[in-house]
Length: 124
Image 1 (cartoon, one colour):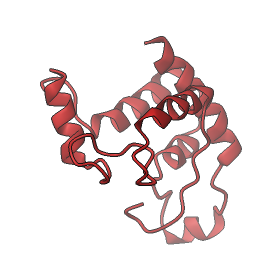
Image 2: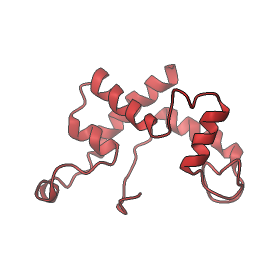
Image 3: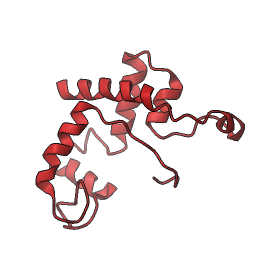
């Protein structure tokens, strides 16, 4: 993580299926999604941007836009509390005083949200 702090992610059934399929990409680098352009290296932001261009999606999608899509979806289609959605995005909640008291990472509530998201994107 850029922030240098742990961020646990509850995996939905859909995410676990993606990981099962990703085993076919194993190049012995230890990476789940190694770069197809630079074997043994992780996917960079620019690699993902190139992939969007190669797929003809760069005119209507950005790598960071996937996070925006998730936030818009949960805000508009679920009753997820703001703090749970922000925690799912690994955003810091509130100021340092609030953070000192809010020590939960809301993992179980995020598990429910991520299962909903996995179901949504699997249908798309």
